[in-house]
Amino acid sequence: MAENLLSAARLEERMESGERIGKYLTFRIAREEYGIEILKVFEIISLLPITEVPRTPKFVRGVINLRGKIIPVVDLRLKFGLPEIGYNERTCIIIVQIERGEQQIRTGVVVDNVCEVVNLTKGQFEPTPSFGPSVDTKFILGIGKVADRVILLLDVDEVLSVEEIGIVGDMARQMGTSVPLDA
Image (tube, rainbow, N blue to C red; front, side):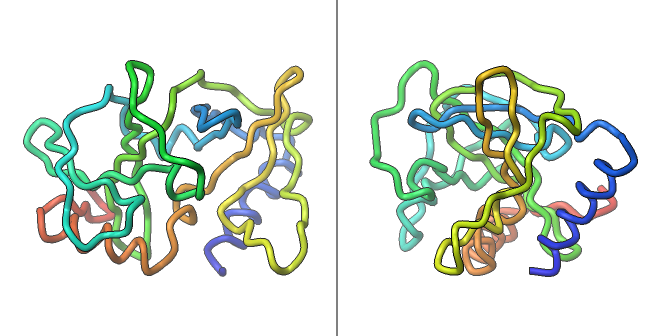
């Protein structure tokens, strides 16, 4: 919770100073468009064979071998409770850095397709609307407005819960892929 407030406070500070909100990599899952801060994106790759890991949640698809590094992979479609679909030539994996405390975990997230990088300014950003206490929106940084599009801006560090990060982090540690903060 404190980390989410810190992220929101940083965005608010940047907005008040007149600074650009920043660049976001946008992608689609189902019919919706999402964005992740470009500084959290390590790389975008086409779909690789994913090795399933037993006894993990369904949205944790398994691991990939990326140039000799084993990377855990999460399917955002399944994480968000959307129906599973077959992967196709547009399906890709975005490799992101998730931060938890002093640990950084490089994780792959499967998305339906990548759209573009957008540069959001103060006028294109809206804070996350309130949907009431029963709806958890802590993983949404805000809403981006680009032309007639609405982009849900994700806080990639909050998309997975502490327990889910623990599962992915444990997989990463066991396979030697966690990255110290100063790396």
